[in-house]
Image 1 (cartoon, rainbow, N blue to C red):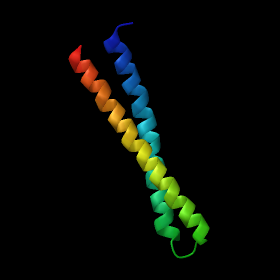
Image 2 (image 1 turned 30 degrees about the horizontal axis):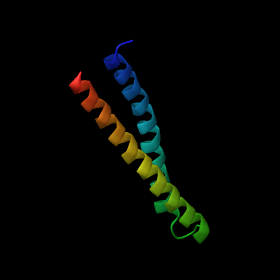
Image 3 (image 1 turned 180 degrees about the vertical axis):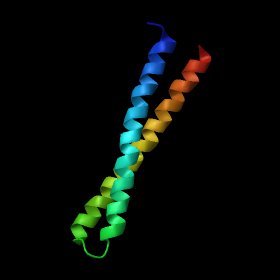
Image 4 (image 1 turned 90 degrees about the horizontal axis):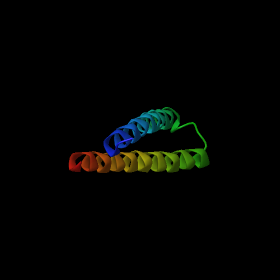
Length: 75
């Protein structure tokens, strides 16, 4: 398998993970927005921590995809 094809497949997998993380992030944000006044404070804190980690995951996946794209351009 060529390096270019392998990188394209890797980007495809990153797209799947990226989509899952984006949907998870949006869902968590919506849940917090709907339950900010009625939910337990500890639950809200853990939700905000989860949102931070998911958002960090989105950033890292995006960074890796751009590195793969740069490597494809070099080939």
